[in-house]
Length: 409
Image (cartoon, rainbow, N blue to C red; front, top):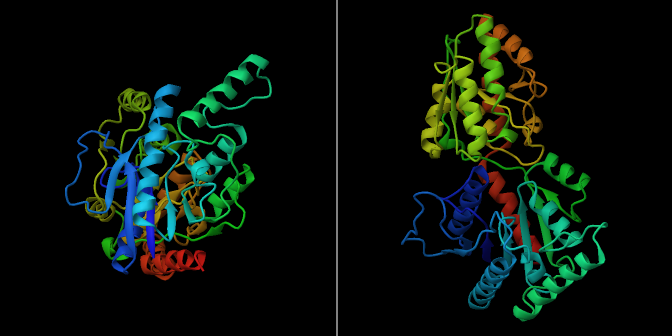
């Protein structure tokens, strides 16, 4: 197959596990003989540079701005769509393979709506839902029922202007692409997206897998104090990071010594400042350590160095591979069951599942495990077997490759 991949934040300049998974999938498909080129965003992050050895990666697309600037957005959209069109004509792919496109032009699916090329979309949780809303409510301004006549007219003028100056590349009145196949990487993502109104006709679920060899299993004889708990997560409110403080307070009130290692990208400076302030206010500086995002090799080592992995994410969609990585490494996972984790964690069998924010329940479980290390050892062994049996990377790629091949037959 010839695959033209379009995705934001392609590694090494990624923002989390979704970008890493995109690279792993495209790398493996390339090893299997498929021809791939990748269109991704320009480097804007700190220490972001173009890599001269990236023969198949084009870092030329614009990310949408955080502030509304319609003229510049239309200008960037035209530039990006022309760039995509040129690559389509040059490469002539069998499949247009979409990944994370929410941060690109809102006219992406509009542009592809008339293509005869097969489109396959890997949805991490919200992309299809987002573009369903764009389709229903407008690309540059949402059409709202309470808009005045003048406001409605102005929106139509802007849309018409974009259509004219782009020579039809930007089409505000478009139909959902006919040649579109969608797959989600968790059942919960699919159901959440569907319940919120996403256009998920004929969508399928292909559960993610991990490269198990990158996460060796560490055998422990018992639990030792202080408890060591790793929290790999982007640092923002929706990831539930603030609950670490509540859990640390609950454990220290029970005279259970604990050290948390928080590791991930700061995605909200405001939240991070408040989080650090709360750590100091609660005198937990010795209990909570914060480190920047690291690579998989270092993260693999950290899983083995810590006895527990706390996964407090509040996101209902997505399929985080963090719990799977920890489970493979012999690090017992404590989760709220979000981001698909309830689909592979069985409470007291392969991990600990608790209701959101219930730190007392977590502390009760930890107290029991401290008293009965045999239960801890049983759970982490079961977890490793679960990952080996059901979430291998090779099986996952086989399923993805099969889905892609079937889509063009």
